[in-house]
Image (tube, rainbow, N blue to C red; front, side):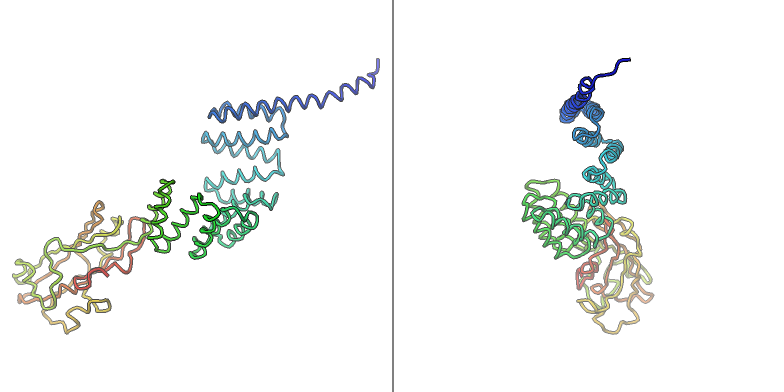
Amino acid sequence: MSLISAEVVNILFNAIPHSQNQYDSLSNNALTRGIDLYTNSDFAGAVKEFRRAIGLSPFSDNAAKAYDYMARGYLMADNADAAIKTYEEAIRAYPARDTFRISLGDIYYKQGLLPEAEVQYAAAVKLNSESPDSRYGLGQVYLNSGKYSEAETEFKKVVSLSPRSSIGYYGLGQTYRQSGEFNDAITQLEKAISLDSSFDRGTLELGYTYADMGDTDSANDLADTLSAKWSSLASNLTDYIYEITTPQFLAVYSTNSFRDYLGPGTAVASLDSTLEAPQSEKSFTMRFAFNKSMDTDSIQNPFNWWISRASGISAGGAYNWGQTIPDTEATIVAIPAAVLYDPDAFSADVTFKVAQNATKDATIDPSHIMFRFNGKDAYGKAMDLTADEYSGITQIV
């Protein structure tokens, strides 16, 4: 048997790197074709090329890029499960790269899988503690989990790592707003916007903050600002302002001549001719117009309404101007006989009864009959306590 010469061995050994270079070149070609297909929205074809690029050079930069593009292609094709599996495969191949962890965390976050997202972002932070992206993602998970202190810590680190970027200040603004520290939220959000005047999310969040504070004028001004360039965001803000606005009585009037401007000692019989008969009764209806859409069940539940004689605690004085109420005074039934809500007009018709006594001399003080509603609007928001009562003398209070 003849032995292989040293020269032949050297030739064979030196040929190996050249073969790998060829594989790398083929991998790069496949990656390039895949990117072209990805750009043209041929995601199925792109995935095949990315797979080829990975197979030809499994642990190269080409393969890393192929994994990322392939996952993004799956996301563009609305296949999040395949994207997750692709990033998990990439993490096994490149365990020291934080970017794949961040991308996987982003998918979980968008799906609302906060514990899973937290695991990935936290792992990315361990791999690269100087990355503002991983800390920002982790901060968002903490924020949406109600862990405001932890979120604040992460966003402050983002600011220290990228002081000229808006995102850290934006995250702090979000955190302070959700924890009710509105003035601090405004400071941070204004800083974010000052660094990037086109930072639409910052303007939107600032509008939300003003709305939460009850400063609807400032919130509406920001909605106008957004409408010039970002009409969808302006719509989001105006919808939120509407939603967050507390429900109020806008106007109240009788639909069948209950004259609530009449004062103490008004003869019940004078309200309607049917009340001239002894022990007769008459149904009257007051229409309450609201400033926004209300919850139908809440409105039409009679027990959410209360009809009473004014106590005098509010402006307008007490029933009968605080004088002794005669025995002939008509009784006021606290719960209305019926309530009907018109969702198109945002109005409720509240029906109640007034009765005559046996001696036909019953009296009443219509101007000091107080109507109160303690239900909710269509968004579950309780009535504004400054506009949830009405009487003829005080109007809306």
